[in-house]
Amino acid sequence: MNETPTRVYAEIDLDAVRANVRALRARAPRAELMAVVKADAYGHGAVQCARAAQDAGATWLGTATPEEALALRAAGIAGPVLCWLWTPGGPWQAAVEADVDISVSGIWALDEARKAALAAGRTARVQLKADTGLGRGGCQPADWAELVGAAVAAQAEGTVRITGLWSHFACADEPGHPSIPLQLASFREMLAYAEKEGVEPEVRHIANSPATLTLPESHFDLVRCGLAVYGVSPAPELGTAEELGLRPAMTLKASVALVKTVPAGHGVSYGHHYVTEAETNLALIPAGYADGIPRHASGSGPVSVGGKIRRVAGRVAMDQFVVDLGGDLVRAGDEAVLFGTGEHGEPTAEDWAQAAHTIAYEIVTRIGARVPRVYLGG
Image (cartoon, rainbow, N blue to C red; front, side, top):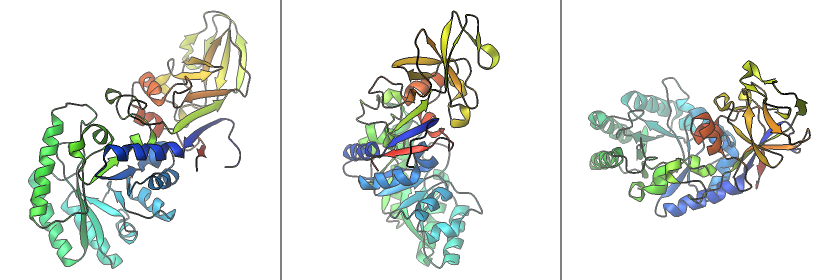
């Protein structure tokens, strides 16, 4: 867009995305890197961030839904794209025609891919997903032989090509968790079985952002990086973004909409959960939970206004919230920074996560479509 929005907007630093991809590639120098751009690139803009990640050497892209993968193709983005969240009756044929890699966790999904390939008149690219202990998507070890056998048979008939074997960690963000070596051992066993049966995948992968940063033994042929691409630490236990060599790409800003003086004993926002102790100045910030500001951070969410960190006073409403300035004064139109890199003393997404008792993944991803994105470094 040509003009900076005035109510609330998110600045997205694409140079930060590029720098983060390079830093993550340096952590896994012998593996390719997949930039995960699901959920609109964790709220940062899938198409723009996909291009920036590819600029910096990401050779794969990852999405959850097929619609996300097809939107990348519609935007003219080439290169391998893996999509893993499928349901019966989805756009299987469109994905095959767009050369999207389809994750397969069971026989029903393999059958869908085969039918789509026959209808499209071309080979479907599929990756077999192993459930090595997460207990979510993926094929259980007890069913692995059946799935591998069926996939090898489908490959022999020409309907599918097995391009990958993969899995996902449950607790890679908890260094030393006993499930980590167990999952790695299970993955190696399931890889060995598939390869013994004749599968020659392009890529084998299990490492997410935390594993990319801390578990070199898990890097195999490809690492999948999501939140870390956007410069946010995937777990406080692993270190801050700065300590991990990452730079947050999103800065969420708003314009102060109103400043007024109220007397002592004045209630603020719904329910009057905040009541002023003395005469004070209040500033209205025109962003609320409809924009993705977590209501759970009512009374605690940090905001930089007038060069100081303030806290949300009272409840976050749908479109707005209030901060108490005390004796300070700012003017309508002055900038409020909800979160950013932290380099200038402003709060970070992690600070909001702590205030809302959640994780930083949710803070950046929940910033909604009503908030314009302004791209820097494009």
